[in-house]
Length: 159
Figure (cartoon, rainbow, N blue to C red):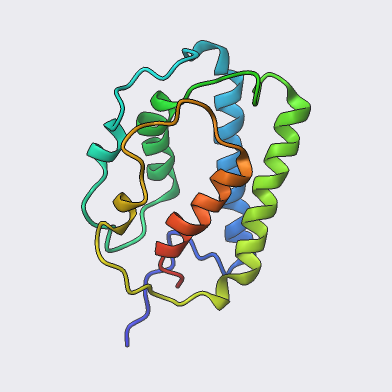
């Protein structure tokens, strides 16, 4: 069997993981530097993101830069910033939450070899797990990470 391409990102190579992690952290840092320029309330209609999702996962990995551009164009416009839960201008809270996300990613990375290489999923399965509307109030980070674990990681091809 031919091996899958690994030149885009091989999570089993630590230097690749660390390098891509720095790209993501730079993306987040740039975002938070400009966070005051974003509206407090989401500027999109409920369901906008679901309508823009493809019916099928890509056949090959996408470059990280392309994924971050999708986040910039498609995710960020739908964000709201209720400061009672998380004020991105409070650096201490940002650092704590960032460490929780990095711990989550590190745990995933440590266990990546225990996941099946390819899941037997029906195309579009993730749409079933998406609500029809954005929540009225923010979800705790732990709940979001649980959603990532159930709805995103469960569909990743681990090669």
